[in-house]
Structures are given as C-alpha cells and as structure tokens.
Image 1 (cartoon, rainbow, N blue to C red):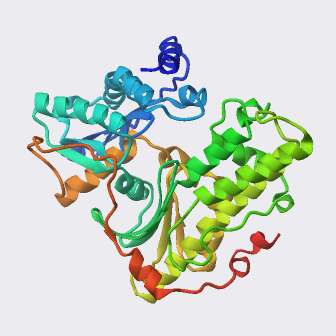
Image 2: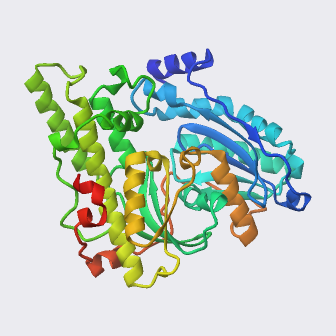
Image 3: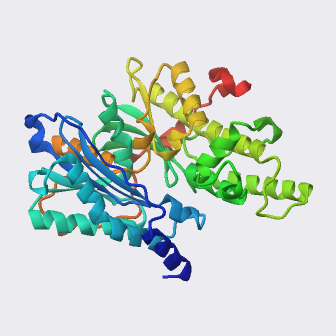
Length: 417
C-alpha cells in the first residue's frame, strides 16, 4: 500500500470522513417476518446495509461513507476503499440489524452486490456475506448493482413492468427497458466514461475543492452548485455523438474539449493550473448543460424507439431515473420536462436512495425472493464480477432503426432560454 493510502487510512481511523446513518420503521406486520432480507452493498466506496421486509418497509439501515477520504486525493484509490470496507462492514451490518430489531436467525435471506464494481470492494462484501450465510445456514441472493438501482423505484412508487430506465452515476450510464425483475433489454450505454466521473474530473481540473463555496462537496455537486450562478451561454461545447443515431453515450471526448477550454482561459487570465478562474461559474453552467442535453437526446431516442416498436404501451409508459447523477436538479428538471412532453410518467427514487446504499440491495433481494430468482442454498460457485452487462443488448436494433429526432428545444422549452 502506498504512503498516501496509509496516511488517508490513518486520518479516517482518527474519526474523519465518516458518516453513519441508521433508521428503523415501526409497525411491521407479522405476516412479513418470513420475508426479511438483509442487503449488503460494497461495490465502490460506500459500505451499506439494510433490512427490508416483504411489504417494502425499511426496518433498519446504516451507511459508512468514504467521500471525505477520496476527496483528499481527487479520486477513489481501490486499496484504500477495500481497507475501509474491511474495517467498517461488521459495524455497519450490526447497526442495521440493531436498528431493525431483527436477528440474523429471523432473516429469510442475505442479498449482496456481487457485480459490477471495484473488484477489491466487491470482494469484501462477498466474503463477509458468505461467512454470514454459511454460519447461519441462510439462503444467499447475489445482486447485480445496476438491477438494484433500476428496481429501487418499485420500493418507493407503484410502477408495473415494463418501464424505461435511465441509470446515471459516477461509474455507469445506460438506458434499458425493465421487463421483469431479472429481465432487461439494454438499449444503450456509455462507450467510455460515466457522466459522474466526467463531472468529477472537470471539477478536479477546475480545482473546485479550493473554491470557498465548494468546500467538502463532491465534484459533481460542486459543478451543480456553481452552475446555478453561471451563464452557460458564455461557453459552447460540441455535443457528443451527433452523427450516431443510437442510444449510446460518450463523455471522454467532451471532457477533453472542456480541459482545452480551461487551459485557454487560464492563459487568458494569466493564472497557473490549480488557481480558480474568474469565469468558473460560467464553465460549470456550460458543462452541466451539455452533459444534460446529451443525456436528454439519447433518452428521447430511447423513448421513440420503445413506442415505435411497441415495447412500451402508450397508456402507461414510464421513465424511471436513478443513480447518483439523478440527484442533479438541472438534469432531473430536464428529464421531467421531456417525460411530460412525451406523455411518459416520470419516476425517480428520493435522492438518498439514488446513491449506493444497502436498502436497494435488500429490496432487490425481496423482489428476487418473491419471484424465486437466483435464491441460492449453495454458494460454492459464487464469484464477484467487476464487469457485468445488464440484460440482453439490443443496441444494434436501436441503431438500425436510425430514428431521427425533432429539435429538443421544441420539446423542452427552457433549453431555448
């Protein structure tokens, strides 16, 4: 382990960079005691656990956040994330169980994220979970992280299959049709980096940690905050993938364009890299806008494709948005407007359930338990998978349809302002 990693771990052990949350819900029905699932999440940099019952009541949850640690280095160091998971997983699980008033013996199953994610992080959650289920002889439910994000909305809203789902986060960006608990059609995904990753990198390049208004904010949150007081029209960035009539996304080329613009402005203002530009709010606003419009365009094409091919019904078409970037109010507002104008219901879990957490894993376990899907009584062959596609990839079909879209400004009026 590097000296930087060791020093970060030392600072955490002295009490910094920790946020722990637990909650319990009273009044669960006895009839649901046979469907109590413990969910465990360690796919990236948060250690989460929760107990959820068959009625969708969150009986107890706990979360250990590593955000402050990784902010110090401007990115996630996998070996540091792994060590923090190891140090905190026992306490997080015990806190969730304690808040729920449920013992391990009462559980119907343990559900844990096994794919996709950081290998070192996934390994911690899986090893702990396997030890738990083998010790107490409980069924094990391996969870696909993106499936869990997609199904979280069914915990908070009444939504039937099928529905269109857009997952936006620091590690993922995809459009899919959820046809069932374990039945997805993949329409498109990022061919390089995720939007959250791109926004974090731009924030790092702008040195927003040094900005007085952004202390302690994650990169994407800092961009969103500064964009509120910026003028997006001061900078124009070319939209990615305009020549491709598909539902795939790309953000790395856009990031390079933004980096070049930042370098040019630094030369104009006569400042060194690492100093704060006077126009930082305008750049933040322009970057947020172009990311949002790129997402809107691909999502709109997915809507049109689904309606054209009768994959969704015009009577009850729904767009579900989840993942950490779904918490961005500017992006969410635009997606809401797009859905409204297209006669789609717009559904999104509350912000705290959009980011990684144990609740979504436990709920995915409940959904799979009900459907009798992937509930294992033998765990000998279980392995974690850092890379794992979601569902059946039909993105080539989308591209073959070559759907030309009307101007988005006619669809989303505030884009023209």
